[in-house]
Each structure stands twice: as C-alpha cells, then as structure tokens.
Length: 96
Image (cartoon, rainbow, N blue to C red; front, side, top):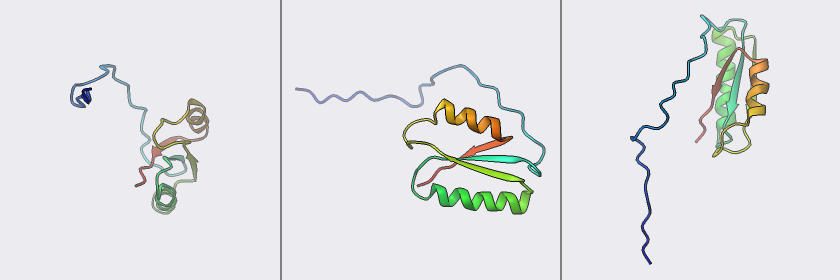
C-alpha cells in the first residue's frame, strides 16, 4: 500500500472573483465597531484590549464582541448578518 499524500499548492491561485472592499469611514469617532473572536486562546483578551484602545484613542461609541463557534470554520451567515445590522466597522481577531 502506498502512502502517497497529495498536496495542494497554496500559490496556485484559486478563485479569480474579486470582491469589492466595503467603504471605509474617515474616522471611528461615534461609530459602533464589531470584533469577531475566532475562539483561539487569548483572542478574547486581545479583543477586550483592542476595544479599550478603540474607545480611548479613537472615540468609538460602542464595541460589540461576538464569538464564532469553531476556530477552524468560518463564522455562520447568521452571525455575520447579526453583526452587519449592529456595526459600522468590523474586524476579526487572531488569537494564538
């Protein structure tokens, strides 16, 4: 029995469909910012620290933090839709 394991070349490209970026606000003052916790270790600590800085330095009015179910899977459509209704700016966390 051969233990041949096929590999995928990550430099090979992929989808050629380009997704347009969302319009960016000029500043964050008075905005509601959404932060997405990827469930990895310390992601919640990182996001709470980022939230504090966003409020203190950039005048963010409100920070909403939501958590994905699994770090290895994308956020559900329901979670993304919920966040999109509540926030004007969003970012995902990368815990270690």
